[in-house]
Image (tube, rainbow, N blue to C red; front, side, top):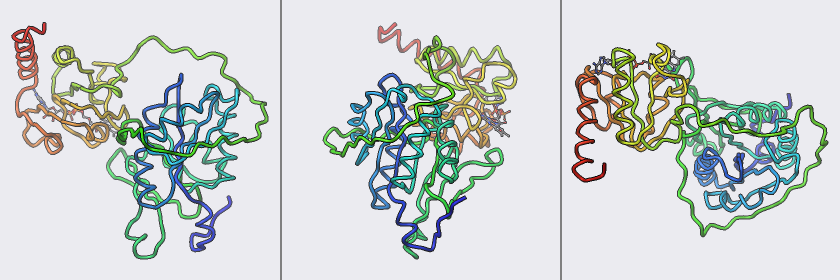
Length: 353
Ligand SMILES: Cc1cc2nc3c(=O)[nH]c(=O)nc-3n(C[C@H](O)[C@H](O)[C@H](O)COP(=O)(O)OP(=O)(O)OC[C@H]3O[C@@H](n4cnc5c(N)ncnc54)[C@H](O)[C@@H]3O)c2cc1C
């Protein structure tokens, strides 16, 4: 595996800039790519390097504007009918060559289904590693200040969330990290930002083992908690499956999605698409209400970036209270219906029902 000498300034300087893989679907950029542009902007400003969006597709140039508005200094796009829909071989063929030619120091990729497939293959093709599901990305500022050497620390939970592992990759470039949707915040778009847009032409074999013939969206299914602005989540503290309806009723009353802890999912009370956490979905709603959830690290990993966190738990020492903005000590099976009824009453009083 080719290595670079981290002590050689020339070898290190050959790899520069921060890239973000711009995932898109049906003419719309994926939310996770916008989130990564925000994070990438921050890292690029600290390092004093440009931020570039990598856009592959067919007739996708118009998406460059959104990338620039969300922080990119430059967008490199490749336009080909082979790239119309995401398919592993052509995408990796093109992007691996771009990496090889232009040598970015950092490459950020969304940990979506597409990104998981794409990121790992790009890493292999370019003889480097990929930190999957990073939850924090930060420069080692002590090292940068003391020695003028820049190193990206890619942090991710390990051993079931019991430790946060800082991963570095001194001898290989680019530093590739994937992050799940909702890990970072989307920056506010700035329509006045200007950026360079370059069409790159990369040789393609056009010979692939598989090709996407048709893309069919499944009818709305699952909890869709990743997109929800408000989530009411239930844990084992609800006592029994039937009590989950207390969570569902409050969620319905305020227009929220229903979340759950893994124990609740494992118990078969609700399907897995509702699971919040490290092995479920990472969420970042404006309001997260946790009823009867203890606040285990694996659950917190998936919701602690939420706007306002409200916890109802009958144990005042429950860990969830350390992370909540509003804590209610009491029986969730009594408090939930009371809150639902009160909201319904106030809505009725205001003539909203
Ligand atoms: C590798 C790994 C990955 C994991 N991934 C996830 C994940 O993605 N998501 C996740 O959620 N978990 C995950 N877990 C499991 C996690 O460690 C916890 O076991 C789980 O989150 C606990 O769920 P809970 O809080 O609903 O249940 P419990 O831990 O049983 O807590 C129930 C809480 O309810 C309170 N309570 C009891 N009665 C009442 C009442 N009447 N009213 C109010 N409160 C009450 C209790 O005080 C307690 O705090 C993972 C574990 C491992 C090892």
